[in-house]
Each structure stands twice: as C-alpha cells, then as structure tokens.
Length: 248
Image 1 (cartoon, rainbow, N blue to C red):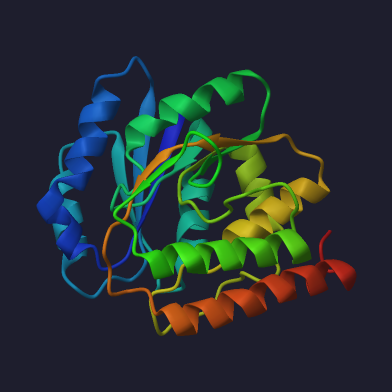
Image 2 (tube, rainbow, N blue to C red; image 1 turned 90 degrees about the vertical axis):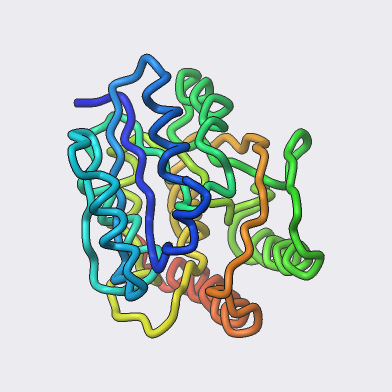
C-alpha cells in the first residue's frame, strides 16, 4: 500500500496541457520522500485530451488512467477513490488551480487525527487570485445556502483540493444518494462535495478546513446560470434525502 494516491478527474483538458500541469504534479511528487501513485480518471473526453494523457503516462509505472462514461465529476472522482491503493487520497483538479504543493498544508492535520482535510479559499490565510468578481459572488451565495440548509461551520465546500483517509472516502462515496451514476450531457461539477461532507458531518468525522492558495483558471465549461440553479436544487435534495431517511 502506498502512502498517497492522487486522484485527478479529467474532462476535455486539451487546453491545460499547454501549461504543463501534469509535469508540475510529477515534479512535485518526485521531489518528496513519499510512496505515491497518480490516478487520472477521464470522464468521457471528446477533445482528444485522452490521447495526450495516455502519451504522458506511458512508461510511468506509478501513473494510471481510468476511462469513464461521461457522468460528471462526482462519479469520475469516485472511480479514482475506489481504485486507490494509498492510505490517503488527495483530490486535485487537472488545471492545478490549487497547486499540488499546497498538500503540505493539509497533511499535518491527517497526522493530528483528522479523517478529512479540505482546502479552503475563504478562511483566514487563503489566497484567491485572478477570479472574476461574479464567480466570487456566486461562491459566496452558494456557501451561504449550504450553511443554512446543510452544513454549518464550513466556509468553502467547493474547493477541488481535499485529502481523505482512503477507507473513509470510499465509505462516503458509497452512501451518496443525490449523486448517483447517470449520463451527463454537459460538463458538470455539481455539489457532490456538499453531500460527502454532509455525510461526514452526520457520522461525526473530524474535518479540518485549511487555507490554501488558489488561482482562477478560465474555462468555458462552467455555465453560471445553469450550474448555479442545478447546484441549488441539489443542496435542497441533499437535505431532503436526510429528512426522508435515505442516508444509511
């Protein structure tokens, strides 16, 4: 069993190759005294990026590529978690909006007995750069909803940089009700982080929220109106799933 599995969800990432994002991940991990692996999970990309990922990982024994039918980020990440061999699993985005080196801020909390450590762009000490004002406002409004309806005390559920004890992550993903396998038509991240953390909160798991540096990466895959409405409805569904006894 390795020390750390890094799970990177991927969907139509062709443009991110120009910035050498995977090179950054590889260089960082190779510089550390860790037994590690990287699992890239492709969510049915259609832009040719899958071929580029295959070429990148060729000959790299501790890199793997899993191919999924397009079902959105929740099921993409779940596939990586289920395949993980590490004791801890780090979730990080392909665009490295939060650079992988920020994991050094999270790992000490695992050593202190926290089962889940989440990167946060909202708590004191965090840094967000180059983010359009409307995206920041969207995040603020969404988090206010999450605090009212679902989870109090967590200031940023949506940062894509989180580390879990692997067995804990597998258990939480197995209990998802709102985010279950189904085909998607569009790129969709959704509020699966909220459902995971809501389940963790219900189980009394120890969760730490740690400030990280985050850099806005422009993308055309986010539809502010469509995605905001759907995520709002999903948060309500999460609360209803609990009230109706669907969480076991």
